Image (cartoon, rainbow over all chains, first blue to last red; front, top):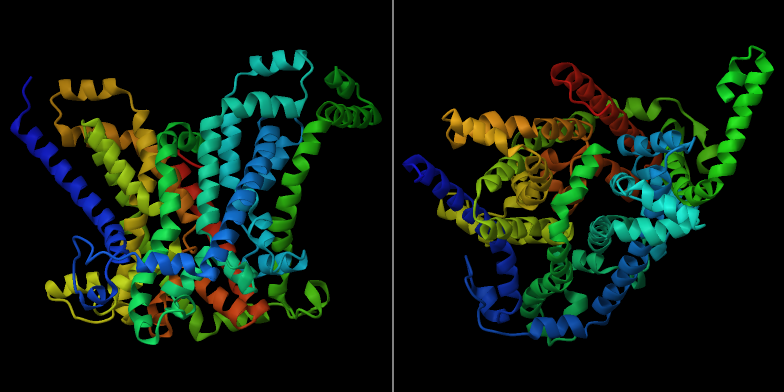
Length: 291
Length: 318
């Protein structure tokens, strides 16, 4: 059956709309990428759309990587991501496992208490006071412990764990396996796609997180990458990073450094998500709705 | 067995049966309860303790006296907030930004999902998804930095708008431009990511329904209207209800990164106000009162939306 004229129009329109959307989505990112490797003087003089880098210079990247504060920011962020996500996954998996068991008398109550927090909370100030009260203030742990379980992720993981067939655990139980063995040897290996997506979610949250770091961390030594970025992008201060450059060059270098830091802070996370992408649709979101 | 014992009539045997059930449950599940300790501790300390801590909204909290020993002042902070000039401004700003999001940002991913669903070429489809998901993974700091850069007087967006007759000016200094900037960047960042959930729902639609519609002579638009949309309506409803429960939680991270005193008039919202008054100006109790007002209104809106939805189309959260 040949396609009718209106069908052809319809398909054509779809391709045009989606292509436009892709251009609009990509352009800002390309603009930043081009600007980051451009020659600083040409960049400052330039106005309007950029289709390719203006000249080619890696000075900005050299400046960023030579900067002790930026590297320390990177180190702090890595700590928060690695330790934070490990703890996130471990504690969330424990909760999801218990809540996915049948015939546990208190599970209904646990679930109600947990889900309620999705709809009501004490607010920012009381949370701040609690974090201060338990002694986490001005420690990198303040960006990890108070956010160790994300309720939404917990519910999704529980739904995934529930779908593991009972028969597998039954036979393991007969072989004398305890709950830890069942969780780590059977349930988690069978739920790897969900674990991967949850790990990804937590990693993005940690890598990009800045707000709580900005209110809980006081010492400059503890600042993660995003807080350094805020100084450069939002507060417009590139002084600390360009101070090594000659006085006249500081302004110019500062302009390209801005874009180079964006690249350095964004590329790692953009490099990871395509590998997990195929799991996004299947399972995870559906699981969330059923839960 | 326990049922029989409970039905036995004597009140104390019933109590014994209940107790026996608790003990039996605890003995069989004790390791599960031990595993649950970190989770429960987390929720107790970082969710329920702050809910309790919210009582400082009714006190004059000072860090030296602490939550318990600070003086009770009743509704003083609430009445001073409701009576202040800021109350109407931030409530209005919050509601307007929320409504605009609901009107423009909420439908965008639904439309995108429906369009993507119509694409037959697998590679093209995958590419569109890969690219439109990307902005979701970019940090708010970077997004705000890009917005600032692109909308300054010689920024790329300002240049484009000037080309179409706009004014050549730093856009973030004009109160009337803040909302469009906020909403458009919101759509840019989230349209792809939020379409995932609808795409998942679309996969669940029975292909035979499309066959049947085609048999009846329905074109592509009619198929979308009569098959696709009804198929994702439950998902839309649930997300709509959840959205209602967040009416007053506009993306304040972006706002506090972008706003400046020149545009507070349209940009300052409840949560940014709480942040500024509480953490930057140390008005703990006042700010906690504003935050509590926010939480309570959100909860009521959620309950209302759920109630209405259950009556209207029988999809609801509970």
